[in-house]
Length: 313
Ligand code: SF4
Ligand code: SF4
Image 1 (tube, protein in one colour):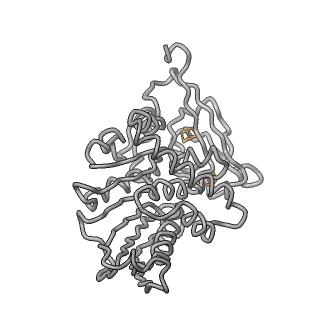
Image 2 (cartoon, rainbow, N blue to C red; image 1 turned 30 degrees about the vertical axis):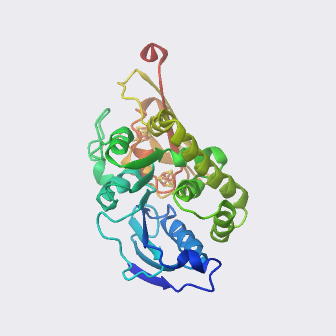
Image 3 (cartoon, rainbow, N blue to C red; image 1 turned 30 degrees about the horizontal axis):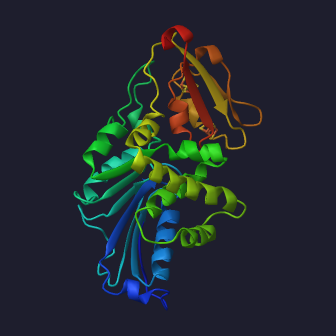
């Protein structure tokens, strides 16, 4: 479904700023349920408050995780078209790694800024081969390779960082914090707008997420090695059976009993219990392939693969 919105400039707090301002283009991409539209709305409102004309164009797929969602946000003294042309995005924000790669050619080649979460949401069709060690057909490009291809880019495990804060859904606010370093709006202005769009009770976590995203970029700007190390931290080790210790955590409160993990597990080692919650019925059979983690629509499964002591040496 495509929707387009024009937000007329209100009595601007900074009309002078808006006058004769060139159009800026921010492209936000991800999959359903990640918060693409939230970022888009924050961008639109804060730009409107600065007296800019704003045009938004959105396409959302499935309402829940899985469908492709993207939003074009354009703002300036006068914006004619709601959509961003290829090679014309000032900033590309990707809430999912492969989606970011898919849209890379929309970035301005010389000055565009790429900002991406490195977490992967692997679609079912990329996991047809479920044997141990089988590779998925998901995008193979590493953060290091992609950051070398763009003029200016940041990739980090925003979902992992948000998880540490206590709410994986705050990953989009971390990305907003990163985005904020590319625009001249004040920190408190961002925070007051973000507060309007996050669920009640999550304001404190989202405030911290925004500040962490900003601080992360500042540190990465001064220490590129720090940025790259973080980008690569989530890449799982390539190990063989017997070299891995696997543990699987299922967050019962997030599991809605959809049965997807039970059906896709190649070793048939999951089942739904009598409360309709996924549970590991045969831990010895679990190879740690992560198919269940990738395909759970509710982020309820976390697979941890730890190299055995002899493999780690
Ligand atoms: S863990 Fe995820 S995929 Fe498995 S039944 Fe629960 S919600 Fe569905
Ligand atoms: S439980 Fe998950 S990680 Fe273990 S074998 Fe099944 S799909 Fe793979």
